[in-house]
Each structure stands twice: as C-alpha cells, then as structure tokens.
Amino acid sequence: MKEAVDRVMKAFAMKHKQMTPEQERRVRDEVSDFVAELLEKRAAQLSRFGDAVPGTERQV
Image (cartoon, rainbow, N blue to C red; front, side, top):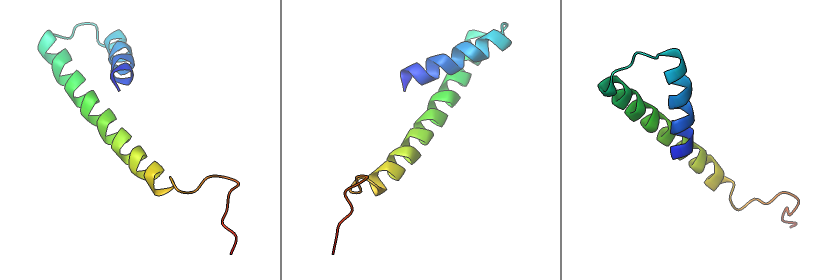
C-alpha cells in the first residue's frame, strides 16, 4: 500500500509544487485512507471467489 500512496503523492506533487508540509500531510492521509478502502473492497471481492478456482468446477 505504501508504494501506491507514494506513487500518487509523487504525481500530485508534480502538479502542486507549492504545497506546505501540512497540506502534504493532509493529502497523504486522504490518499492513504482512499487506498486502504480500495484494498478492503478488493479483498472482499477476492474472498467471495476464493473457493472457486478456474477450470476446477465441481461435477455433481
């Protein structure tokens, strides 16, 4: 997750070069929260399909 936040912050800093340390901290916190939410949603999606392995359907 840290790598994703760092990539977003680097891209954001390129467009907003005059950020104060406080602004940068707030943006980093918001980005971290957003990425964490995305990862939670993705983990929930993957866990729903965790038992299903492609090509190994159960035959009844």
